[in-house]
Image (cartoon, rainbow, N blue to C red; front, side, top):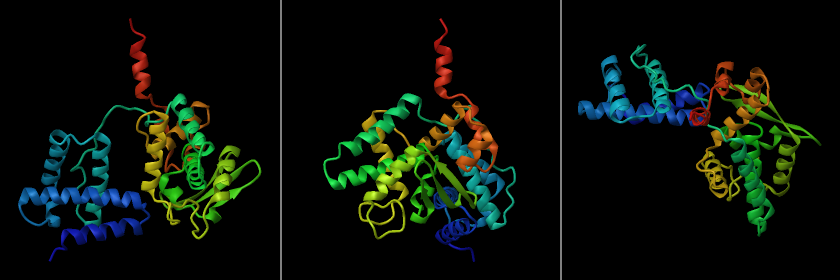
Length: 297
């Protein structure tokens, strides 16, 4: 007898976590598979079985997703990865049944220099003008989180799992130890004096009782959703539109590339699995395309 779909999803998620996928990736992949299962159940009018993971149904699902539901390119490509891993886990061969979407070859979205400066200024001003000890403590925490995203290139998942013993602060420089980062790799990330000073200011007022570097208002570990919220709030106050934590990480990488840092060095700092990932920063931004046509008369 086939496992009910909710057991399949739960077991698949556990498999992903056991094989080194991050909590964020496991959640996204599980959600993608659940979406496919729901589509099959609507199409067949019956409960999902592994036999519905076949080339014909996958092809129809791709057509429905891309042409009818207009699923964006990046989202669809994640669906392909999710379903490929799911099929392999079930022992089902689907090689070539799904194709990745191809869009414009553009660099990942990042902040331009002006937006970067306004974002950082807004964070500093919040700490300087805080009216109460509680608001100042939160502002210093937010400043430290932002510094690790945009000036050290950490992932939000890496930040929320940082523990006190992972942070090494010297007089003018320091380093962050990332344990079991993406791809099941450990890495040491050097940090400059500005990041050191920002972290030291936060640690001086940080509540005790939790071994994680960053804590929420209740004193427990800060969650990724909390980082997403604080970044969105800073962007709103800076009046630069919607910004995500990953855009700040992209900004870190792109600023290094613009400053002439070799790609292999950027790849190591960012913890990229291959240098091909880092090469994305050599591609043009959408603004570059707009500027190019803007010179025409």
